[in-house]
Image 1: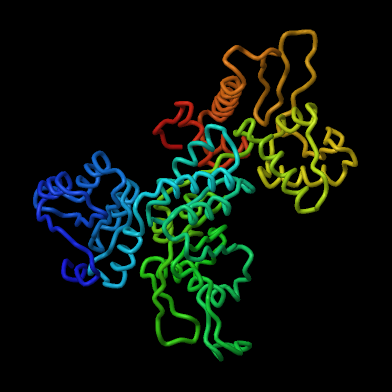
Image 2: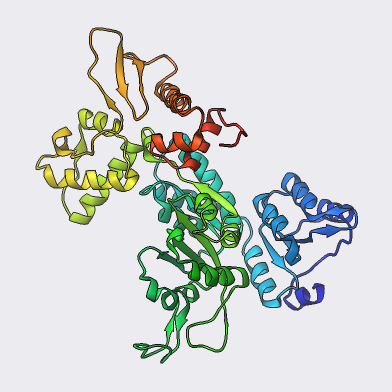
Length: 452
């Protein structure tokens, strides 16, 4: 391996033990590190942990035998840049190091990346700020990313941002909606075909996976893939090779896979509707997108953004939101999330002949949680899918966000008590996925290890 790297013009040092590696890393400044999992006095995961503490910006690739794939995935989750299966493919190794050694830290570039994040990922809420931090970590890695979130939360936008922040940003970003391709055309679209391979194949066609060579492949709604295609996709992701329809030879492809679904893949695996081996291969790095209703004043920031964008596209004067319209927008549930908000603003821009948007222009969906007009008492009743509870008419001193968290926690507890803490049934009653419920339970310290 050292000789191969020398031929690439890369200077290397070899450490035969974990202790030697730590000493080398203390004495020298390196651009990348390759480590085996099994070392005489420890393992590569211990070295990775040490590097995270002492050289956090150093990209680390883990070398693993086939039988240690689970450990390699654990290494990626712990912050490894990538892993290489033995025996080592020279071409794969070259591509890996080219990305690891792409360029030194460039603070001007970092500023551009920060600007890109804020331009593509609009918002200042705590969930969005945390998402930005996570995105930067994911961008350093070559690990597959799996994005979850309700419909309309912006999964493709985030996938594109992962690509543009990574060192693959000069390569293509190929987005595929797996639910939009007819099953009979799926293999040809993904893998390509040779002329004459089937009726109507009048010329060679490059598949979408090959089109992603050198970049990122985004598979949206991956749960919609037929089982037969899941087998072929697994081999493409694992081996980085594809065989077009009608071809006798395989083609090497280098791509990072990013996938997304609004469905619960855990449940689909248990039902036999999604292959477990593919699930584990694509489900290395998790990224859950928050629903719009949990993003507070981001709703108004997004609304203003859409007003400016639509006005520019339609070449019309921009409009302002009245205070009444802002209050209405902040009070919506948004089952369609950001996509629904965009549609609301677009309709309002069409309906308003004034220089402002007021409540009569906002054709919003009915509230999922309807606040009934308060009577002479000090409380208002909130109707939910589970039961009703009371909230004070005046907000407490801790502010709106903490107040809303209390309401959310009360709704969760109410649903859990009604279902005798059957989390699956509680999620169904609340109209959310089990994964989303589990996230909220963990957020409020209500998560338990009890089985359903």
